Image 1 (cartoon, rainbow, N blue to C red):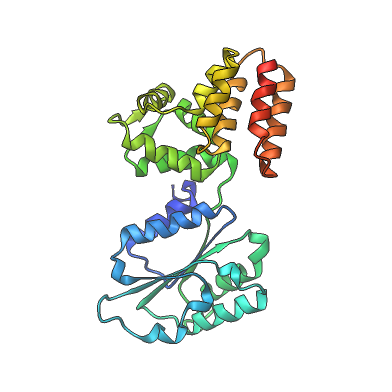
Image 2: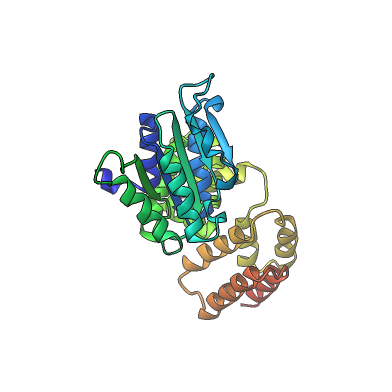
Length: 296
């Protein structure tokens, strides 16, 4: 059963047990998941016991032997391990904190990198955790918080459960479509939905109803204007949607055209080109896309 859990869920289970290990090394290419880990720590423990550091270089390892007067355990949350640029420097720092291992400190290291970037550091931690003697061994574990595309549905279901709601499969697919599968945007939308409904089991039409009740213009109002070939309304809406993430607008358009049976191949090319242009920070990309789609 545990093997079927996402790594972030396994980490949450460790938190619920009270963090029994000395070192938790957590890495991900998607930075959102690292901030999620930090949020879980801050939500679960007394703020007095948590110390937050922006990089390993800020940590005074000599203080590890000092017992806090205010809390039985110190939890050190260390961001940006990747700021130590050279592998040799990273391993040197890990050796230093390994030598100061004790039961009064929990060290949570967060690293924004891929396995390829830090494989030597990860192997060092794993080998040290499996040391052949008690003297060599220290209590540590490694988590890779990144998720594969096939795990995205499971993560969204897990994330919704944290806000006390469950999402039907059509709602999960809908959120993936309108956000482009970006975890940060998905989390934000789930939080918004949970705050604006009393329902616990939510489908795609429930989400649309919530957005309508907000009385705000959404990306789907723009889709509706394009559908009706209402050029004036479409560009007015685009202007009003300036504060919405462009990915949300592209996601809504993708969702509409993917569910339309007679979509021309040219439309997919236009959407792809707009996405590419937005990645290159061209602010007029959406205006041009709407203009082109109105011609179809």
